[in-house]
Amino acid sequence: MKKSKAILLLSFCVSFNTLAAEQCETNFTKEGSFFKGKTFKTWAEVEGVSTAEAYKKIYQQIAKDGWKISSSDKDLGIISAGQDVSYGNGKTAPLNVVVEESGSNSKISISYSISGGVSSPEKAVIESFCKTIGAAKS
Image (cartoon, rainbow, N blue to C red; front, side, top):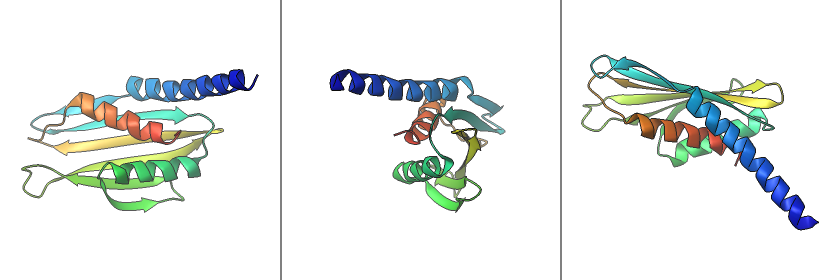
């Protein structure tokens, strides 16, 4: 009996992570061009996680991934960070995350911008976004 409960709980948690991952990829957008610069965005809801817990885990994930957190506001659910651009002559690529309440869930929105002449592989951006959102549930 205990084993079946553990399997049920595990599959329940996996389905939450799968839902957020699917939303993360489905809601992904990009605007701009190589010459003008690009902005990448996505959002997803993480079920059953408070905004306070989601904020804490996402903040930690961003720091672990090497982003330099420039400002944050826990009450507003905002984290602003950046990374230096290789060969960018002092340019930085900003990352902004908003964690907000959505019923009993947390809605996480992410945007990342790069300036003209800078490249960032779309697949890597999606993976990073979804990993960050997934951290809220871990």
